[in-house]
Structures are given as structure tokens and as C-alpha cells.
Length: 96
Image (cartoon, rainbow, N blue to C red; front, top):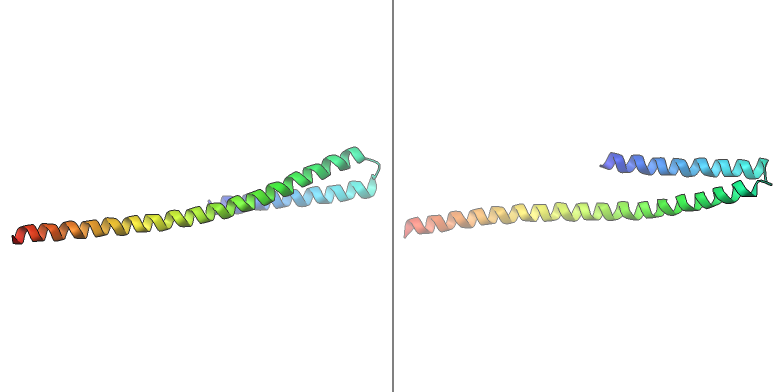
């Protein structure tokens, strides 16, 4: 999962950079192509927004994963405590 997240973030950043370079070249070489420039600026804005949302979701995922890990650890500790208590009850029943 970590590799997928990293790969996706890299691909998104790479796409953004390619679009920025293309936009710069069109503005420089064909400034009269306002149809392309406007469309590309809009797409660049969308990609940048997606990058922000992706970053937020990635952080939330990491927090949720850590919480899940903590809860799993707590669950295992509780199961162990239950086993210990059951053994104590069994020992107490045998002694009576």
C-alpha cells in the first residue's frame, strides 16, 4: 500500500509538472492560443486541487492505520488478560 501511495503521488506530481511545462511553452510560442491556454490553466488548477485533496486523504489514511494498529494491539492485550483471568478462575475452582 505504501508503494502504491508513493507511486500515485509521484505520478500526480509528474503530470502537474508536464502540464506546467506545456502551458509555459504554449504561452511563450503561441500566446494567441487562448483556447488552449485557458483549458490547460483550468486542468492545472484541477490537478493542483486533486494533489491537495490527495495529501489530506493520505494523512487521514495514515492516522486511521495507526489507530487501527493501536486498537489491534489493545485487543490482543485484552484477549491475553482474559486468558489469564480464565486460568486464575480455573485454578481457584480446582483449589476449592
